[in-house]
Amino acid sequence: MASNPAFNRLEKDAQSGYAGFGGRGSANPGNVSYAQQGTTDQWGSQQQLQDMYNSPSAGPTDTGRVTMDDVIMKTMGLFALVLVFGAAGWIFAAQSQGLGYMLAMGGMIGTLVLGLVIAFKKTLSVPLIVGYAVLEGLFVGAISQIFEQRWEGVVPTAALATAATFTGMFLAYKSGLIKVTDKFRRIVTMMLFGYAIFAVVNFLFAMFTNTNFGIGGSGPLGIGISLFAVGLASVTLALDFDMIDRAIATGAPQKYSWLLAHGLIVTVVWLYIEFLRLFARMRD
Image (cartoon, rainbow, N blue to C red; front, side, top):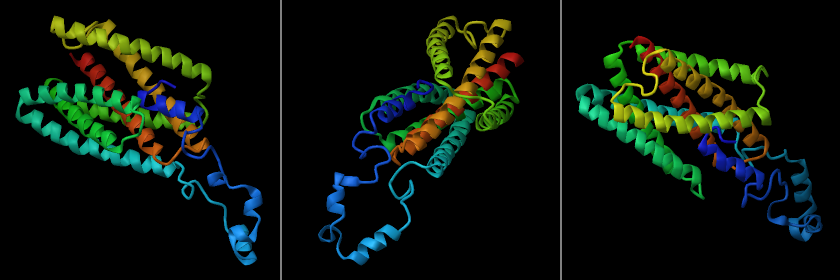
């Protein structure tokens, strides 16, 4: 799935059986033959063998596989980092407008580079994911302060809208109101690729024309573009929820909880930024 670059590799690894993890749902680590398992030489006394049979089955935590609790705890941890460093970025931007623009631009470029590294790096790196959350926090804090200075009240409105949309999408997904099918994934993926290309063009247009929002400005076209972006980010949440469920169902290694949490935070921040732009356009 391509709702989030961080999830692309997880999808590929799931299809290949999470190479190096012993196979999905394996109850026989090390490829020990069942003939060997049945001998008292291999397992010791008959009583020890009986104790093994009587012991409870190993759960996902015991076998080192990702659980919902893992994803929730990692998501909360990364979100806390975003909030802490977001507060720092907010304070720095309030003290100096120049520093605020520098943090916003540096954070945007830094998260873009780190995001690509995380997505395509062969091994999962927790420090890179933590570093991404730090840069993302500085970017969000600085850009929020810049928007709030010019359009007072847009930040709390965007934050509330983001929380409400996240809750609504989660309930819609869990209740089955939104069903993530292969066709749904393909359509959203194509829309994401198209919007990504547009976002780059729009950024360059805004830089060279010195306009606040780029193509469409704060007119009806611009507001329409922002509404589309908010809608796209919202449905992307459904893909993220589905990816988490699929990773748990396929027995992904526990370390992937970091990647799942990272991907979810990326989408939530994107949704918040799009709400920020939408409300600022409407106020401009």
